[in-house]
Image 1: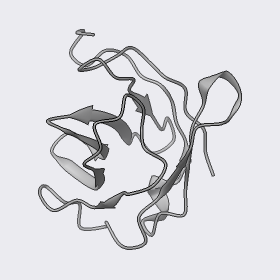
Image 2: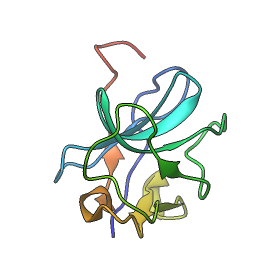
Image 3: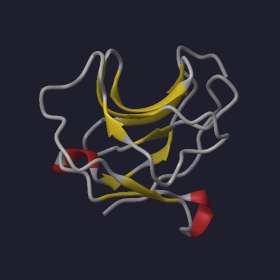
Length: 107
């Protein structure tokens, strides 16, 4: 299991990073993503201001070969605005996520 805290916004929404795996959780181009730049495990087509709890699917484009079912569930009810990424079939996606810095120095 793991937690995350909101970092600086990117496209007006918080970004998160798992300091152990280096994976990020962020919003871009109309979807929330979990993965790395141009290498995604799971996405969620929701336009919510914060990462959606459910509705995640395996990425259909730029998919990491390690992305497998089931997709994760997000728990945002942890202290200090932290989130918990749980139950992903790709076990390295699960874990502690913390605030991230602005992407390329831009909020």
